[in-house]
Image (tube, rainbow, N blue to C red; front, side, top):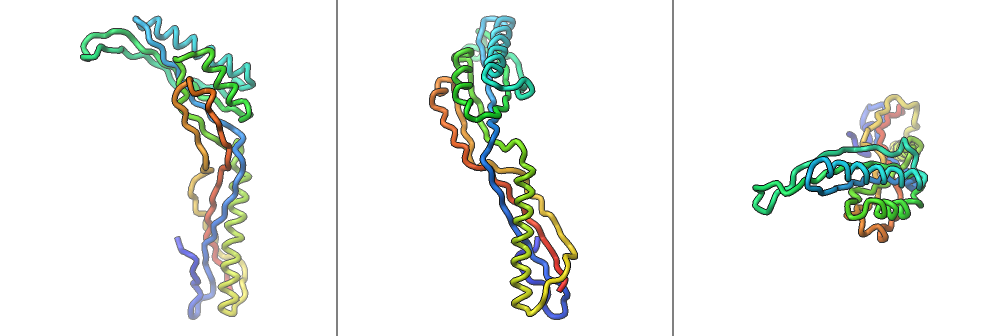
Length: 215
């Protein structure tokens, strides 16, 4: 990718520069990933316990305003547990995971506390991440800022070279990825539910463009 460089030396008839722009917004969705893990002496009871607790989590989520479309099972399974010598099977551990989109970040603390209440020590809060529900307006603002940055550089080069910018003859959108959350909170166990402060911060999108003008 060309840098901030003039390409109009000698008899060249154009200038080509890169521009970078950013746009930020406060996240309005909290993505919450949780898992229940239940031990029992046999497979059936382990699975039944995990399933019951996962169902209770889904019900608690709905009670706290999370819509059904925003609750998704992410995985389930069961495995044997062995003794310290890894020889004898001493029981089984079943797990079931849920992913939730909490569209009112202010409800997160109460929701996690409710989860701890219905799942107890079987609950693990695996991940809490912050998102912007609709990142496209951010991308549009970032692209606009990137083009303005490129134009300002090109105008400076034109002024230095005694030229006048003409029409745009080429434009390349350099794709670099989507919204990048500046803040993310990782939580380990349900016992810390009362200490889950989430600072929303901002999500930032960066756009890069390469533009060529006649002159």
